[in-house]
Image 1 (cartoon, rainbow, N blue to C red):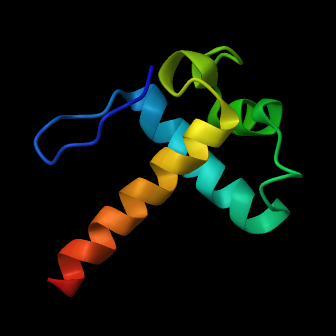
Image 2 (image 1 turned 90 degrees about the vertical axis):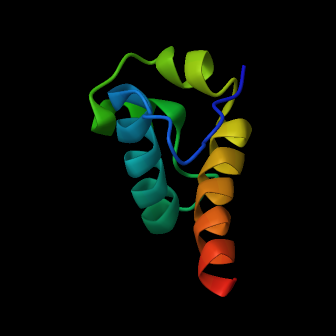
Length: 77
């Protein structure tokens, strides 16, 4: 299952926490060194929540990049 980001749909608080912590940990530790356990511990959410909301660590990264690139594309236009 993949989370779809649209302008007028509010993200669940758990998804927001995961994305914020994943972004921070990917930036500081790197993608390979940041584990799902690290992300969920920092976010204060259940370990299974990454798989529930995103499906995998790779899909989490894809959603994070999509969110950032959507913003960048809007600024560019």
